[in-house]
Image (cartoon, rainbow, N blue to C red):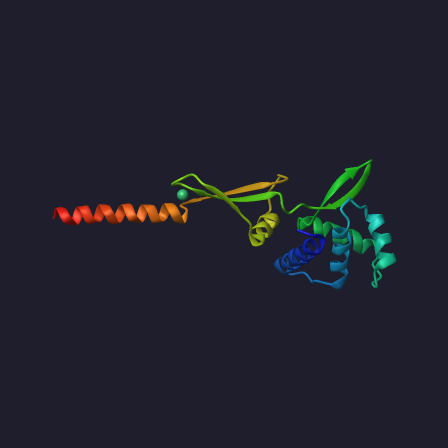
Length: 164
Ligand SMILES: [Zn+2]
């Protein structure tokens, strides 16, 4: 995922979260989020305020910055980290999750991607637990094994019928 994709995915997640919480989506919020998602390192609230006053067409108070940082944290879009004794914020890595499809016939495992599932899991509250990654295993049968099984069943049915 390149940076532009990551930013637009984050904006979409924010929009979903705000709708879910019945909160207003504002251009200021989006611009703040974009500022955090534009850097690959952690950023402090003060650095973010400075960056916003330098580049933004909006006047965003420090209180607004702090309020939105808390909101982004609740939405799992950013996380708080302590670096060199300072409180900083960094974007959460959305790719830390795997969806696996496991065939019960041949055991073949394939991985798939679903941004919708990732978003849902990221928004899922985990009480007294800080989830850092996840694995979703789906069990079933691949199309090849399903076709094999069907052929075998048809053969058995035929033998059964011939016996009658
Ligand atoms: Zn299979």
